[in-house]
Length: 109
Image (cartoon, rainbow, N blue to C red):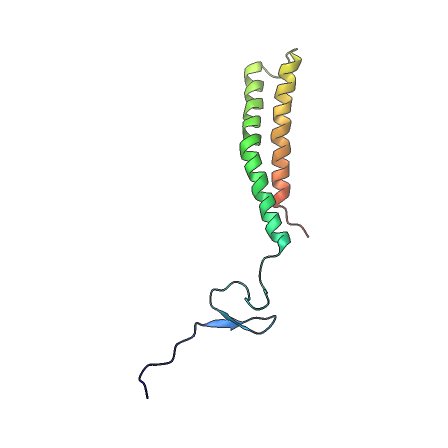
């Protein structure tokens, strides 16, 4: 007889779907895939990341630009149409991207 003890298995649990053994720390079942994130959850996370990047790269500079034009231009009282369109366009882009960013984080049922 040998004095070497048998290998100790990691503590784990059984899969609630198929009953196979899941080692401790394993998020989803390797046998049936129970607990794995679905495609809809992964695409929702991707959409949130896209809207965050767009808001940071386009929305924030557009909002700052529109705000600077309002402050430096003296408000909306001027008669220069191009100045007014640039100011309003910048603010609309900022607000539009902000709304889309907020909507991407709302839970879908």
